[in-house]
Image (cartoon, rainbow over all chains, first blue to last red; front, side, top):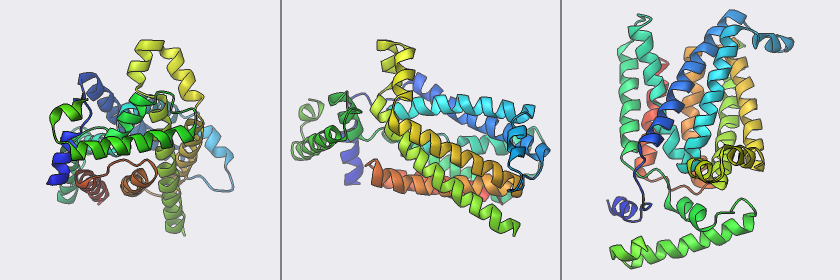
Length: 185
Length: 126
């Protein structure tokens, strides 16, 4: 409980993931789900690939379903990179896992496949996990400090260490001084 | 024999995906908020800075390995086994790797979320 309070107190100053960011997360979800299903459909048409006949893989790309799937997965990749630039990996991954729920719902209501109770339970668990993560902060505050206070952090690794220790000081400060002004400074 | 092939491919997918995800997440943190950077310096700078990042190149390489492992696995096993098994294990692997290598604050909320999603994804295979 204390940990959660601490978390909220030293959240990034602008903790709200705004509408545009939700759209990016939705894009990650949709492109991944659509791309994967098209790829899977295409690979089923291609048939089994033997480890001794790797060249078949090259021809697999010529299958229109595989090609369309790859294009969608490229779109997925662009949105995924965008999301990772402002959110934690452990936030983005669960937040975009609704794609599995989407696939199951498409199977049930568009393809009229049977969805077993066990699968409904799986859908419920994933939705629960997404709900869990959605209420929390999107970014570990130490990442915010490193990107905000060390803009050219990509330059050297040594620099990141400096920023990490700066963040440690900031955290310690925040823990000691519980006044909101201190946190916001 | 086909089962052994399938599971080896699944493990290869999981390992390569976790390595790739961690490297890509680190790369994009180094690039910085893409939206803000694009408004400030333009899309060209965003693309140049992303493609010029060493972690990004390594991450993409790892993802390519994961992708071809996926193609293999899909040709050997059912998509209803391969996709959920690989995804489920990747969620757990990523939570551990993000904590160790990215120093993300994986608090109780995130552990629960990752576990729920991993369990749910595994159940969808059933």
